[in-house]
Image (cartoon, rainbow, N blue to C red; front, top):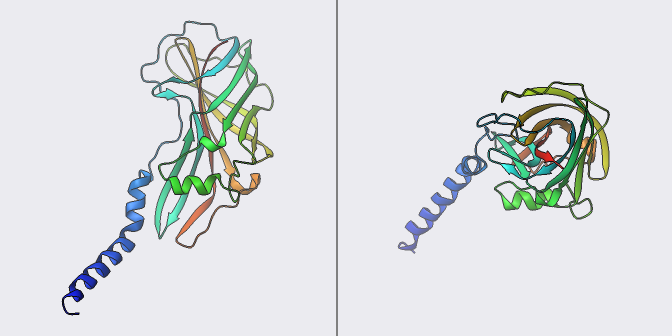
Length: 229
């Protein structure tokens, strides 16, 4: 028994250390609280080579402006603040511009593709208590009314256009305002935005598991690279 005692005490010490360190290990795995949401990057922008008016279709895009959509939410893990960012490149859709006015836009996101760097978190997110991805496999962002006219610079800089969108998540549609950042570069039109959300608006109850509390608000994020159809 005396020989086993040091091993028992050592194992107990390791268990206690892991319990105490768990929030910090988790925080490091999540990328801290400065993980970026989808946003247009102007670095490497080229002069536009196509007219703005016309129909634009979502394409994968090129780094750093690759097409993606997902969510950003803050949580508290045993007193430690953590920002969680989930995203997917499974986004399709198109937009129509006439006389520098955005007249139509519709984008569809495959909910089951949204992932963080934690598989256990993603399984919970896709389950029936949160996103219920098996019942509601897609989320949509649809332009609610024309936006513009607006001049989109051709010098590699961005402009911001306030729009109203109908956001459908988990079978529920809500109308939300969003400031869309737009960049023209070569043959592409790139747009991003972060739609402010209260999760209960779309039937999502933020988890509270005792050791972790998820904030009741966050954003639905998108960045779409588009090319002329």
